[in-house]
Each structure stands twice: as C-alpha cells, then as structure tokens.
Image (tube, rainbow, N blue to C red; front, side):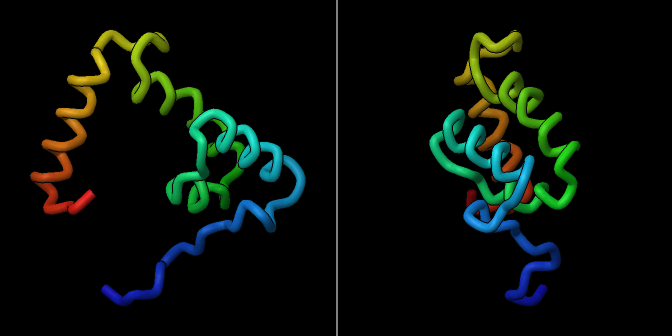
Length: 86
C-alpha cells in the first residue's frame, strides 16, 4: 500500500455550508475532528447520521447497555487481532 491515501480527507477549515457546521458540532462534542469524520465528509448526510449512532456505541449512558470499560476492551482486542497499532 502506498503512502498516499486512497480517499482524501476534508479539511475542516476549508469545509463549506452544512459540513462546516457539522465539523464545528463534532469538535464541540468530541473536542477534535477525528480523521474518520474528515474522510466520511465526502458523504455529508451519512456522516451526520452516523455521529449520534457512534456516540451511543462509544459513550456510556447514551442508550447503550455496555460499560465504557467493556467497549474499550472490545476495541483493543479487535485492534490487536487485526494487527492495528491504534
């Protein structure tokens, strides 16, 4: 795999219209704009629908049944199995 990304990331500083508002909301909610949100910005409506879904999956008390500790264990195990350094 080459060093060049296959899908470009949208720069939040250059986003216009609804994506500019979305990036501001993501930064306010998460404290930053993750690369996954910058890549998925190519499909704005899907990106906006995925944020609340992701929040429920990742955060405790947002409607999910698992604790944050169990979720983190699952993330670490999955990353380890896939050989991911993240």
